[in-house]
Length: 405
Image 1 (cartoon, rainbow, N blue to C red):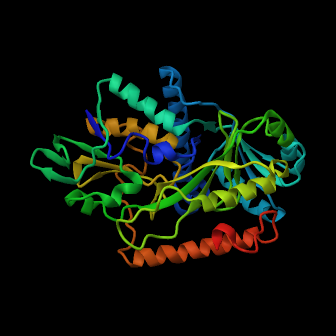
Image 2: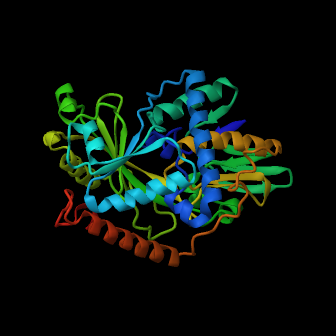
């Protein structure tokens, strides 16, 4: 078995992610519930829960050094007006059998943060782990090589096409002839060249996420805000407030940005300080005691969005090619279990994994350019307008628009 990577293992989303190990599927549990119904939504949740357990098993059995811990998650309403949306999410989770969550009123959630009155309500979920994603993927590379896999980094696939006996993959250093190929290209799939690249065109679109991390907080600063559980925090807004403590006592946060790409090959730069500064201002609005905290690093990366809102795991044309992508930023856990599903597909084995309803489901394509670009610009504008309305009058209100200008 051979793995090729155009940069280094961990260069893409696998190394730039937030490191949240959680049973989340597709765009969101609520979106999947509304679009596909209770039965498929419940099956998706079961697959994701199995994925989180399997990933923990890999970490523990192989002694992976990836800073793994399991502090849980709180989804928080930071404004009284946001509580109804949060309760809708809580109800959707209950309908598909999520039994790790509990509803916290203002008094209950504030008790975890030194009585901070900005916390109006929350969904507490015990089924979330945190890890360092770059460490995790480099450890996976280590154990794969120990098992006999050959990994070629800095080796882009410049052309892919089928042959009578398999698939030919061209690289700058030579050609690889394989009986079967797995394309785990996610947000970069639209850049694949050759006949296979054309077959996969418009299966997904890159969605840009920016991340930042603060300088290390002192013990006194941590004590001033509470947050003793070290859990992740996610707000009920659509674009902001994904944050969690790191293993080295910083606070890491993520924020989603997508404005559409005017060309088919364009990918946004991986660093932008502006969004980080806005999120830092929001962090200080939540925790005024952190008014003097500064950013240490900014970065960014691309996650893969699909028109049908669910991940893709399918043969392309025939059984020689398997394509994986479209995790909507929730791929950390399910990508590990996808490995088991793909192993069954490669071996021609039918299993409960290959019977999962997204496997070999015909993906919906995004519209052709420029309708694709114009449509996403319009959707992005509507989303920004919604979030501006949510922010107006809240502790995060910014008359100048901030990141959403």
